[in-house]
Length: 253
Image (tube, rainbow, N blue to C red; front, top):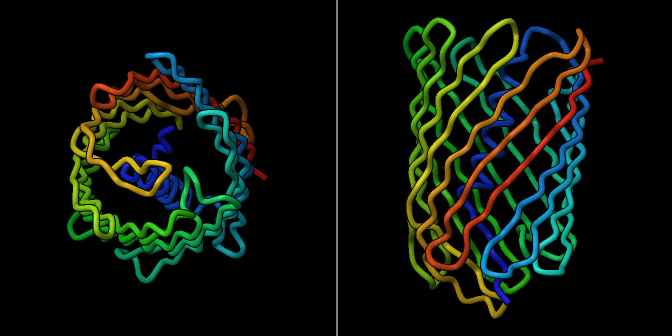
């Protein structure tokens, strides 16, 4: 049985949440987010399910996140804390720590730092470093470097990821995203491809080719409530195809 850990997708999610918090900066909002995602797999594999509950406290510039993942008949859950820092008007950063109960599909321990630098009139550079370990004793390392451009109602970004697993090799992938903002809402399209590392139940890592296309967005239902959605498709080498549907509800208080 394969225990898939798509490292680049996981780090993408973390970084995107960081950018959302920075985007709300100045609004002095506390945020409560409930998220559900269901994935349908081909070739007879069981559906994957994710659910999470996240709280962001503006006073402390800190978020806490509790999540549960279901894969191949197994469950794993984690607790994550992230602290956000504004170093100056152009430089922002965050540090995260996550711990899971089982360490099967998500890291047993994860440490991450993210840096965002606005170097010239809405041209930004982002970089991050993630270190994690799993129940099998496998250690992994993910480095990201990215470029972001804001122009009027649009945001575009390109990211490059390098994933390393101890004694198992190195892989890389790329991700391109485009956002359009309108009346406080947004819609986005993302495309990623490259070689990522899959961890098997015996701790052996295999590089596999992964291609993903995603459509996601968020809109305000009222002044306090937002609804988020996501649709995506993955092709994981010749192992399976995966259709993902996600929805989240966000409350400002």
